[in-house]
Amino acid sequence: GSQYTHEFDGDELYYVDLDKKETVRWMPGLKEIEGFDPQGALNNIVILKHNLNILIKRS
Image (cartoon, rainbow, N blue to C red):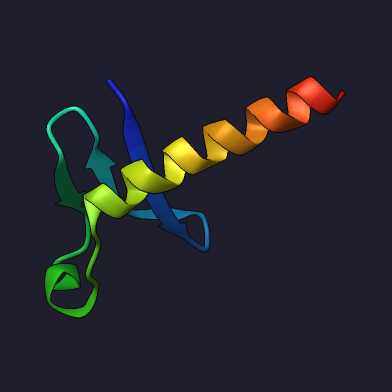
């Protein structure tokens, strides 16, 4: 499946399972201090794919 990961200093803090649209956190207490919007990540991926296609066409 597809995943969106967030790392700090080489350690994975959490990942988002894009198929299930759920966030899995590895560090206890992270849920209280860090917010994450899976829909925002999906939107970013769509934008990045669009921009990549433009760059490929210009190459």
